[in-house]
Length: 179
Length: 86
Image (tube, rainbow over all chains, first blue to last red):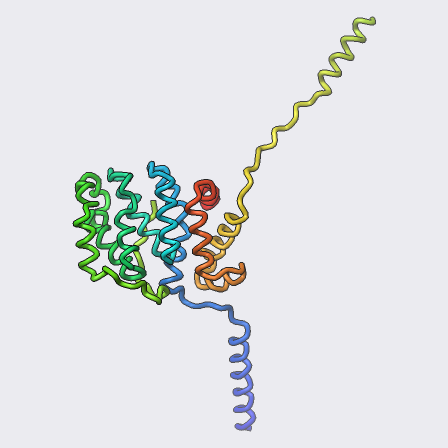
């Protein structure tokens, strides 16, 4: 009797196991790369915002082309472009659009390092969450884009000559802000 | 009587020309934009299945990156994409 109960219990357990392995949908926790890709869905909209801010189309095409050729994932591109668009919206020179990001990309920063450089630059320009709304006019835009500042930010991270990280899927989350 | 007949005919003829209903011009949307929008909507609906969504549309992550870059650098395509993402 006890044996038959055990057999029935085993049968039910095995049936339940088979059900879950076959019928369950493919669910997993979204990775950091997934989250970055989801934010990057707004890249074309960010570029429209840049055009509305008066940044020349040729400049925008140039920076997109450079990022694509350099293999920058779109997940990294959005926060980088956003940084530059916000700077122009706050009064920075349109002709310097993309200079910071171009320098970072050219120096080989990708993924976590690029995100960290952008975050640091956000903070430096007073565009971080703590300073949101106070950035306008808080810092001279010419100073923000000075070559010394760019060189410092690259060298501080040892970014000069650094090769792109092969594991772009494992990059740190970048802070996304919606317009 | 003849004048009345002619007036009636003219009036009827005038009434016969019913105003044509104005059909709103539908702006053609690029197939690239349509594809990107379809993928974007699917990814947002199933954030844990990004790779499956891309695979289902015949794209890899780098392929989708290229598609978004192409749309982003083109002002017309970006406008189409942005208008439909709202």
